[in-house]
Picture 1 (spheres, one colour):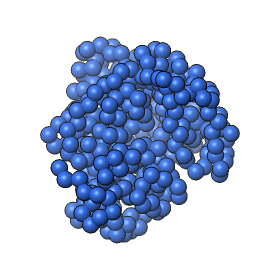
Picture 2 (cartoon, one colour):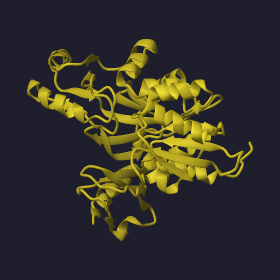
Picture 3 (cartoon, one colour):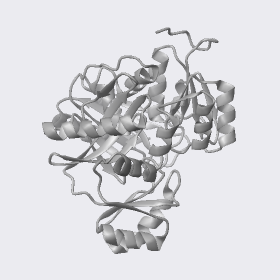
Picture 4 (cartoon, rainbow, N blue to C red):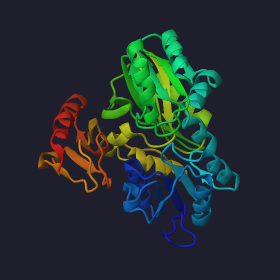
Length: 387
């Protein structure tokens, strides 16, 4: 494969639509191969902006603005990194010959919980828990009654847990309805899911292109309000459960098609595995791969985009812990205890230009046997504070 220099007429150019901490790592991996990086986000100085060749600030839900930027930059590959993007713009750009990763249809399906759930359960026949879609408060009450309590309520379009809640009783329904309005996306329709009595949940990172599909070791994680707090790799699973997880991950990613890494979220009960969601991009729980694998999920994403071999070495077990701000600041700074910088642990600070309560600003990474790594990650994250 030919690797031209960036900023030349023949350079390979990727455009990141969304430039948060995950996009930043993708940009760094692309730069390592001499790929020109254009980072786009809705606010200035986003993490990937800081390491890209060029940065743009636009409303990515504005079809005309997004198409105009694509036409001006003429990227080789367009990598949507968030859900809040004009899907019409992506379809139109694809029709004009631009390469959307993994493809515009996959982005369309996965950015909307209704479309992806119906595709997975009804078109592909994957096992899921019972679910209904509602558009009114009264409809929510009725659907929750049929699903039973507790039940999970999510906007059909959102990310990082925004707008998601668990209703434990009928008295929680109105609160869940109000919380759904916090969605990063479209809260006009909600999915109501019966609560699956699972033993644990995993992310099965699945990298694919036209000739190869590869699975990372399963990642266990703990979430709060739909947003990740801790993750570890590998999750201890029975051979049968792991086989079922890989089968579901391959079925959904083959169904979506295209190139890239997918974060397939699954519930596991004994040997039974249920499909939950899928993201056609690096997954936040996969930050742990920065310390456990020779090729992180971000490096694998770039390899898949370019059609390169996806093989890698799993170095060993590890864990990650997210630091979330407790402050509101336009000049954020983190006070990090030097104990995080040891032989088998480190910290990645994302460099976000503003801090808000609950906003993820850093991640602690530990390389050790899972149980010890997770215990150390829990302790270390307490040694990061808003300055």
